[in-house]
Every structure is written in structure tokens, then in C-alpha cells.
Amino acid sequence: MQPTNNQYYSSISRRRNKWSVLFCVQVMLASFSFVGQVLAVNEFELATDAQAAKWSGYINVGFTRNIYDSDSYYAYQAFNIDSRIDYKANWGNVLFTLGGEKQTLHGKESSFYDPLLEYRTPLYALSDTVSLKGSLGVYLPAERESKLDRLQYAPRIAGYLFWSPLDNLSFYFSPRYRYNAYQYKTAGERVLVEQQLDGLLDAYWQITANWYLDVSGRYRISKNYYGRRLDDQFTFAQELGWSFKPDWVLAVGHNNSGRFYNPEVGTSQGFEIYDKKSSTFYLSITKYL
Image 1 (tube, helix red, strand yellow):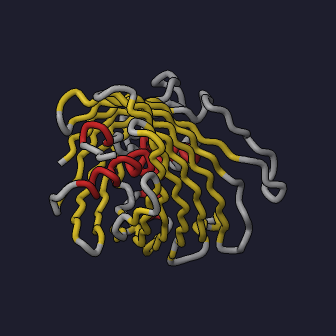
Image 2 (cartoon, rainbow, N blue to C red):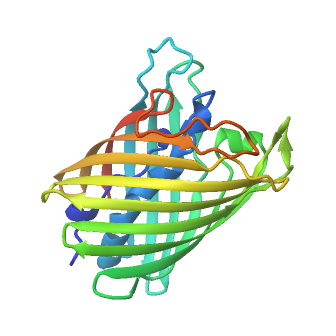
């Protein structure tokens, strides 16, 4: 199959999260920022490899809200922007991803997301329907919490395994390992997270020429600087997108995350597809360059 911009661009990341959020509900929402990036990878990667242009990218603007009343302590509402620049050569791709959000409730906090500078190998075809590429990158401290916790840098290694069994259906699996290099092992009474291992799975269905459905999940295993394994986390997201004109996508989506029981930590809050305490909904528009 020959991917095209309209067919295979899934809306990109929104830490609406997408994840990114701060105060009580924060701990859950902050994990969304990682999934956000995940949604765009599948089809954006394949489409970029099919293009002849050396430069490509996108700009995504979104609005995110949970269902709590505005005067509730748990209410979350934010505008966010994400962007990526991608330079393509015969030896692979160099990408720079940057974004941020502006919260509009309770303190009206705003923050950048930690930008990611990344190299990706060329796409290797294992068969007519299966392809593979690798990635090596580093996160740089820009997010408010990263700066408060004195993050210096966070190298990440990842792989992407794509499978396209049908012209209108594709999947990818991406294992990722991230090491957080903080200046100190603790921040106040908190022991900081040193290592993170993620498994990302995404399914993309091109419903019609201009409509798509994207469903993704991420499972995360983390350890702190004392070697203690934290609660495993799972994030689940769904997105419905409409390409209303070439290189433009309007999307609506839902994100939710949860934790699984770890006897060393305590009782699990569990995980459900929808949870009032942790679910967020978003509307976004993306322009592909």
C-alpha cells in the first residue's frame, strides 16, 4: 500500500493531558503526554517515509477538559500546542518535537513539555506488510515539574514495528526505555523515577477517505532511584479524526490512565476505560507541513 497524507495522518499528541496535568488529578494526567505522541507515530511515520521531501512536520493545537465543574478542585482545562520538525535523509530522520500547555483554571498554570531531539533509522521492510525502524533520542528539561525536580536530561531508546494487513488497517508496537538523569535522587520527600520501560500498541482504521479511528494503549513499568518498582501504569486513548482538506485534520478524543496493584506500594486504584477522576476529552486541529 502507498500511504498518503490524507489517509495516514493521525492527530498528534496532546498531552492534554495528553496528557500533562498537575495537582491531584495531575499524577494521572501527566502520563498522557507520552501517549499523545504515540497516536501520531503510526501513520505519520509511514507517510513521511513515502514522501520525497526532506523536510516535513506538523503543528497541532488543542483544547482539553475533564467533566468536573469549573469550581471543583479536580477540574482541569487547558489549551495546548504541539509541533514537530522532521529532516529526512538516506541515513534516517532527525526530529525535534516541542509543545506546551496553558491551564485556564485554578492558578492558570502554563508549561512547556520536555522537548525530544531524536534520530530514527530508515524504515526496513521485513515483508510486504511488516516494517521496522529504531530510534535514539534525548528529552531535555523544559516542563515545570522537570525543572523543579532538577532533571538534567533523559536519554531514550525505542523501536517501531509496523504491520499493515489491509490497505485501510494498520498497527504498530513500540517498546521504549527511558533513563531520567536528575541532579539529585530525591525532591523533598519524594524519591524520583530513574528508569521507565514502556510498551505502546496502536491500531489505526481508515474508515473512509477522510475519516479515521485510532485506538492506542501504553503499559509502563517504572523504578525509582532506590531500585523500588512503582505501580505499573496503563494509559488508554481513542481518537476520531476527519481530514476536512489536504494536510488538515480535526479530531476529538478521550484519554484515561490507571495503575495496577503493586504489593510494595499498596492498594491499586484499578483501571477502567472511563473514569471520572482521570478521563479527559479533547478537540484538536492539526496542520501537516
